[in-house]
Length: 317
Image 1: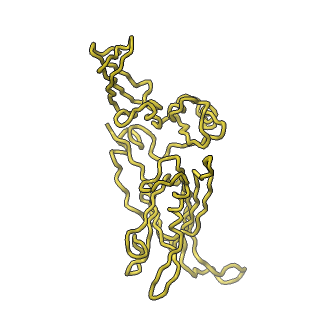
Image 2: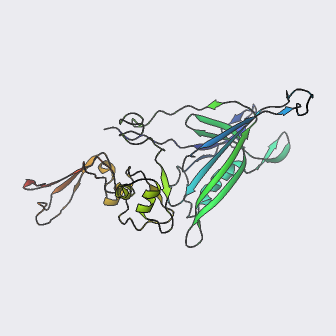
Image 3: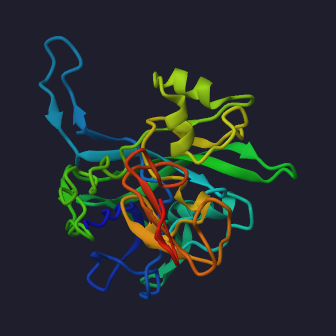
C-alpha cells in the first residue's frame, strides 16, 4: 500500500562570511548555523526586481543610464499557532506564540562582530529555502500581528510579514529532496493514496458562534456532515472560535478520536483485540474486532468500510 508523501517545510538558515569572505552556513564565530523550520509554509511569496538608473527624466535630456547593481526583494507571510503541532526542532513555547516568532526575528537582530580590529553591529545573512526555491540575502523588516489570546492574556496565534533583499538579480535554485514513502503519483494522485497534493487543502478559520453548517455554506460545500466528519466534530453547532476547519469534506483529521492509530488510520486495516461482551453481537471474551477503512472522517471509516467481529463461534457480522 502506498505511503503518504512528506510535506517539505521552508527553513531559515544563518549565514556569515567565512575566511574567504564568502557567505557560509555558520554562526558569527564559525560554529554551527542557526536553522529554523516554519510551522506552516507560506501561501504565496512575492519577488520584485529593480535596477538603479539615472537620467532620462527631462524632455530632451540624457538617456537613462544604469548606475548601480540590481536589487531583488522577497516578501512572504508566515503563521504560527501554539495550539497546533509546533515546528520541527522548536522548543516548548510555554503557551506564548512569541516564543516561536522570536526564532524568526533572530535573523534580523544585529550582533556584535569584530573584523579587522573593528567592532560593530551587523545582522546575519539568511538563506530561505523551500524545496527548490532558494533566496540568500538579509531580513529588512518583520511585522508581527497577534490575533488570538488565551483567557490569561497569552498570545496564541501570530502572523509575520517578512521582507528580505539581496544586491543582485540572480535566480538561485536549491536541490530538491526525493519524495518520501512514494508520495507524488504513487497513490493515483499528487498527494499519494489518491488524496490532494500536500499543502493544497484549504482551511477556514471558525468565527465566534460559528457552526459547521455555516462554515460549509460560506465555502460553498453542501454536505456539511462530511465536513463535520473530516474535522472530527461530533456536535456541528459547537465549534471553537479560531479553529482551522477543513471545509472540503475530505481528509483524515479525526482518525484518532476513536482511538484508531498507526495501521488503523485511513486507507489501512488493523485489529483491536479485547475482552468484550455484549448480547446479540456475537462478541465474547477474547474476541477480535477488525477494522478495514478506505474512506475518511473522524473514525477513519466511510461507506466503503467494514466491521468484522470474530468470536469463538466464528465471524458473526
